Length: 101
Image (cartoon, rainbow, N blue to C red):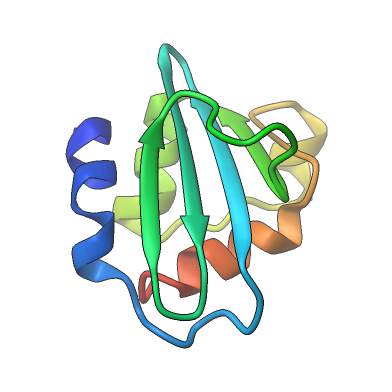
């Protein structure tokens, strides 16, 4: 299911959602993906494709699916307990907005 989501990201990409390019690295259990977004493009790569992503997100595949499919939005408790870890939680909102979420 996670692989399907990343494989179809470019189809649900919303152009002009971001004003500046951003890179995202996702570590979801055994699944590692890099997503590079600009105002008019979306590129998904397996593994770590950039040295220092603007936003790193580590969580379980199940929690990612909850966010993606059920529109759950992580709160402070989720970050404090380590359910989801990110160096830039605000950028995760930009990521979701870039796909109409």
